[in-house]
Structure formats: structure tokens, C-alpha cells
Image 1 (cartoon, rainbow, N blue to C red):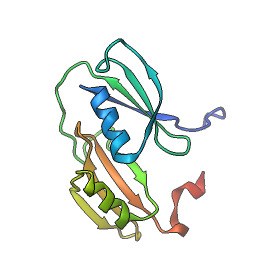
Image 2: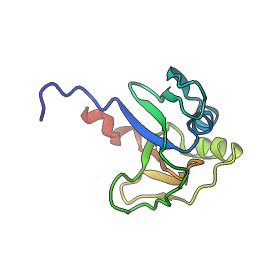
Image 3: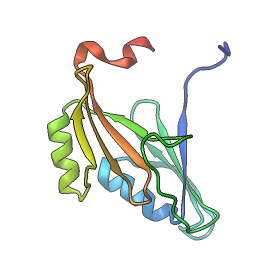
Length: 139
């Protein structure tokens, strides 16, 4: 391991309309813009959103308006995993904000997971792990 490695700081998402996707993440998850690189028009600007303890989502302008359909299991980058404290409450809140879940299930490990897409089609996985089975204990 690279000894200087501290953490994965952010994920970058290219969007045909970065402002619209930024607004969706802010309205849906309560993220906030912590930095903006202003390119003169909102559709060309770059937005950095605070997504929780030490995590940033960077939303950048895409080169085209073409959307690519993504499915769990496809090669390459798959999804954004968001850990929640209460799965049932989080699902209800997200549904009230217009989110449609593709699947919600309990894994063989006892974790609860649910998949849905953001407005650009990026896959988001909502995750609940019992308190004694959280991956952040390893960090």
C-alpha cells in the first residue's frame, strides 16, 4: 500500500447538466455545495458536495448529453454506496422525494440493501449494516 495514502476523498460524476444533478443530490440527500468552480453558466460549472464525514461528490459537465444505461454487475464503476442508520425510515424519506427503488432486500450477511438511480441513471446503493458488522470498523 502507498504509505502516503490517507483516504479516498471524492468521487467524480460527469453529467449532461451538472447544476440539475447537483440540485438533485442536495434536495434528495441534504448534501451541500462546499465549493464551486464557476464557468460562467451553471451547466458548465463544477460542483463539490459534502456527502458525509470526509466524503465529497464532485459533479462535472459531461462531453455529451448521451446517457448510458448502467446495471449492477456491469464491468467498471458500478455504484455509489450510501450507509444509513435506519433502512426503513431512509427508504420512506427517499420514496417521498420521488425515488423509485429497483430492489430492496436483506443479504445473507443480514445487511439490508436497496438500489435506485439518480436522475442521470447512476446507480446508488442504500446500505444498512447491523452495528456490530460495519465496514468502517476496519478503517
